[in-house]
Length: 207
Image (cartoon, rainbow, N blue to C red; front, side, top):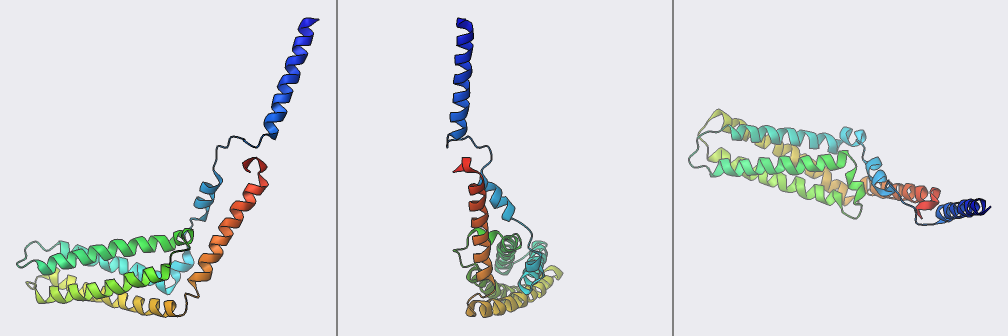
């Protein structure tokens, strides 16, 4: 008799604990919602890669890399100021422009909508145009007529021209108030916030 009463009491206690646990707002979660939304927003933007800015960025990265490879093949120099300057400019332009290309092509810039990415791109292209012009002129004046130095100068002026065209287009876009990328960044940001909020509302245990 007492054993039956004890078993009944234990069953009621376990049922009560299960019900209270199900109604408790503090439920353990094993998968954060925000991290899933971040990775879901990362995708390859083929439209950007096919646009004027995307194509110019790819050409700039390739030409800057070729210029850096040519200047690295110079074995002897005296004086070496032109070689060192061109090496620094080509390497810096390759790294910075490559990072920006990666950010724009993967839509990572939509995760930081408060930053003016058009102005950032404009500063990069304008400074790269100026520094490639200076580095190419200095290397053309201070070289030993070697094949690697001449090739580096030629590709330096080529990439300077591409950066110049990109700067012109970036200035036009910036003067127009960023009508293309501004609304795009805002809409992507709002869409991500809405998806995150809707998923939290659909799972009451996360509230």
